[in-house]
Amino acid sequence: MKKIIVTITFFFLFPFIGFAVDPPVWVEGTDKSTATSVTNFTWSHTVTAGTNNALFVHCGANTSGNDDGMAITYNAVSMTEVAYIVLVNGNNWWFYLANPATGANNVAASWNTSSRPHCEAMTVSGVNQTKPIGASNFFDSSGAGVTGDIVASSSNSLMLNGLFNESADTSAWVESNGAQNLWDNTLAGNNHIRGSQRVASTSGNTYTNGWTWTTTRGSTMGVIEVQAPAVASAPPIMSDSLIFE
Amino acid sequence: MNKKYLKILALIILLGVGFVYVNKKQKLGATLTEVEPEVKTQIGYFAIHQFRNNTTGELIEVPTTKEEYDKLALPNPINPTMNGYTWESSWAGPIFATSSTVLLDNQFARAGKDVASSSIVRVKLPNESEKIIKESDLPR
Image (cartoon, rainbow over all chains, first blue to last red; front, side, top):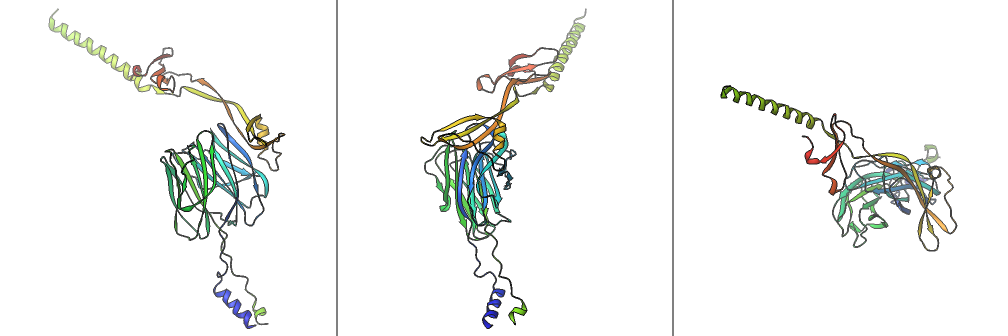
């Protein structure tokens, strides 16, 4: 009886000890590109079964100036767009969907202006299902690199970084601060898309993201913070009658 | 006739001609507006399935219809198949027909977007048929 009371008292006073969550984990990705100026694009992406899955889609195009009506569905379910920011060196979009259907389903993107978007769909597990996205920001560059800061809004989150670059340059690409490369696709038409991930460990800290390369070209970069599930609450407190029975 | 009166008469005539000329130039120049040289009209859609050769990796494009393309976005779609190939993706887009803009009165349009012809314009003035002139000769 004494052990039970001590244990309950401990969890009551320190409910978060022992319940730290792991950061989200990037599981799989599919990157695709179109070959001509189009307004609709569809490809298949497989979501494997996992805990707290979320689907993310990043697209880039050399149009700019407005959102261009970009809309994306997965298995006919509308995805949510991360707050769009107007850029001048190209468009950069991020979309997400919590708890996507597992298995192979189609991603369908549509927009208004005939152009050549290049997209990646990716599955991430261990994602906060009620608020998958924390901070986000988008950046522009016309030089030989692009860099931008983002302040983590929670701990143990995963930073996903999607780049669109109007260049076929594949040499000397360096990710900032040891970010891990996820996808790297040099496309017909002198366009290049890249993606990377990095774990942000502390809420409120500033994390610098970016790449450097050798060719001076217009580029855009979108960085999103994928949040881990909220810290687990303490286990239910036993009733008085149980404690003192 | 007295030389003095002749000078006054000549001055009045000069002022009158000048007034008419300036007035005409201002009226034309003030109302001219530039319009796009071409108009695009959507006349349909094209759609493509892209497949990858299972042996060589070569990508090929196979035309399809917009109706078939749209079915891919539905739940549980039947994705395209081809013997010896794997479906990669599909896309669709509008088909446009391009024609020259019909100019209305007091409108002008550049003859082309390339550098060589950028100084040539089509212009339509009231009571005149459309004509091609140098941009520097536009009434201002």
